[in-house]
Length: 408
Image (cartoon, rainbow, N blue to C red):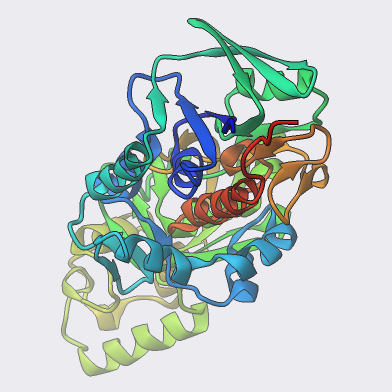
C-alpha cells in the first residue's frame, strides 16, 4: 500500500503545526520553505520569547479579537482553542506560563523552545523539510498536483498551502481560481510629528485612549512614544480594526490622544484636589498624574505654563490647556511603520471559498489553506498564532482520516 503524498508549502507556524499532527504511518509529507530558515515569525514573535497564544478559553469571547474571520473561526475554536494549544505543548514537555496581560509564553522565555518542539515533532515522523525552495507554479495533473519550484518538480496528492500573504503566493492561488482580497498592513505604528512627542522616545503610558473621530473608532490600552510617533497595544488594536479604512486614507488622518485614559472632568477634579492639598508647590514639581516628569514638563511647555509658577496661581485658562493637552491632544498621522515583531496583513483568500470544518478549499479538491494566506487577522497578543494552531490541527485531523491509497 502506498502512502498519500502531502506537500506543505510554507514552513511557518501553520505548516509545521499541521505536519506535527499528521500520521506518519499513513502519509508521506514534505515541507517546502523558500527561506533558508523555517519558523521565522515564531522566532521573532514577542521580542524573541514567542507569544504562543492568549489565555482566553471561551470561543465566543476569543473571536472578538479578530477584526476579520471572527464568524468563521467560531466553529474552529470550538474544536481547538488556547487550552488545547497549552495541552499540546505541555504534553511535549514545554512548560508554558500565562502573564498578567493573559499572553502565553514558554517558561524558558525563548522562541527557540517552541521552534525546536515543532521541528522535532516533524523530524520524529521522518517527514522532509526542504529550505530555499521557491514555488513558481502549481498545476492540476489528473487527480494530483504538480508543484513546480526553482529546484525541480514535486507531485502531491494533497496540497497544504500556508505561505503567508506574499503577493507571489497569492498570485498562484488566483491563477488556480481563488478570489483574493487585496492585502493591506494590519498591525502598524502611527508616524506622527508633534511637539508633544518630540525627543521622548521610550516614554510609556499604561492606560491610554486613542480615537479616530472620522472613523468613530476608539481603543484603549498601553501606549508608547517611539522614534516615529506612537505604538503599543492601544495603537496596534486600532490599526487592526481599521486596517482597510486607514489604507484608503493613505495613512493620513487625525487622532485624539488621551494620555491618562481618564475622563477630562476626572482629570480636572484630580488636578484641583492636588492643588488644594499642595497650594505652595510649583507646578513643575507637582506629581499629579501617573506620567513621567519629562512628559509632564513637556505638557506644561506646550500649554505655555511656567514650570516655576506656584500651582495655586495658575489661571483657569492654563489649567484647561493642561487638561486638554493630556486628555484630548489632537495629532496628525502622516504614515505608518510596520510593527516588526508581528507583521500581519488584512486580506488574502476570500473566506467564502474555504470550508472551515476542515480548512479545505471549496474551489480546489484536496487543497487546504491556513494561516495568513487567508483573509483572517487578529490584534496583537498571541491571537494570530492561535488561529494558525487551530486551523492546522483541523487540517491534520481531516488528512489523517484520508489514510492510505489502497491498490485497486
